[in-house]
Length: 307
Image 1 (cartoon, rainbow, N blue to C red):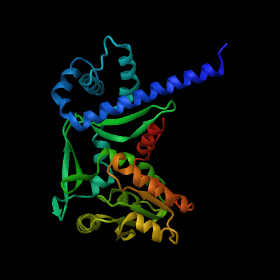
Image 2 (cartoon, rainbow, N blue to C red):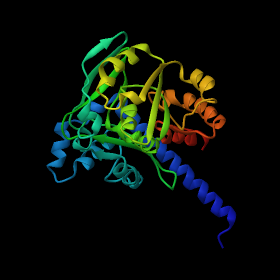
Image 3 (cartoon, one colour):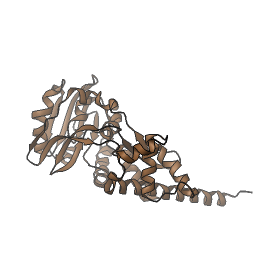
Image 4 (cartoon, rainbow, N blue to C red):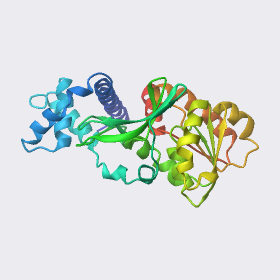
């Protein structure tokens, strides 16, 4: 007879194994993207494709081989690979993004003002990059989403102090879909970037106004002079130079905003504290709908820390 204690112990063992596998996947992908992305290159991928495998499988095998994953003789490694990599590595279609309305309607000049610079950056063929928010499965798997193009792909980018701060990449487009689709009425957004979110929701008939709170005056100048004039619905957009949390403290309670989108961080590492701080204002304003950029990734970090 299977006792409740036995079931509990089995459940704990499964949760521990899942946690360890999640940590392993994030460790491999994080180290690869930050330290050795060039080791997966066009030449090696094409050589594997010529053997009859897909480009996604080729990229997956090359990444796994860099970190000692044995797909021939190690059953645990094979199980890990088959559980994570097919749902983690994705071939992207450039046409899916080039035809997006921002790409087709907005031209980004190469220009620098103060500590900020507008330019185009490129993904080389088979360069890997984060392409979407973390996939969280029903079984507690947390699977990073990594993409690549088979051809060179250019994307608009905003650099601050020579550091990439905002870029309209597949990741930005995919991770903003929900906040774009759900927006309505009078919208408040914290963080300007290149104005992708403001542009996309300005095209919606159900969005009446968009207030963008941005602290950096150079970003505001670049956007206002070179990007905003290209918007068909620029009249809907108001830019406010202010600190996001001071604005939330002073203006949210008496505002007529229906929807708030927060996009203040570069990634989870600098976003967790700001996310938790903004959640306090969400609780204080229950009549307003709040959405957050890469919230799943932030939540997966919080969940992992508690396990």
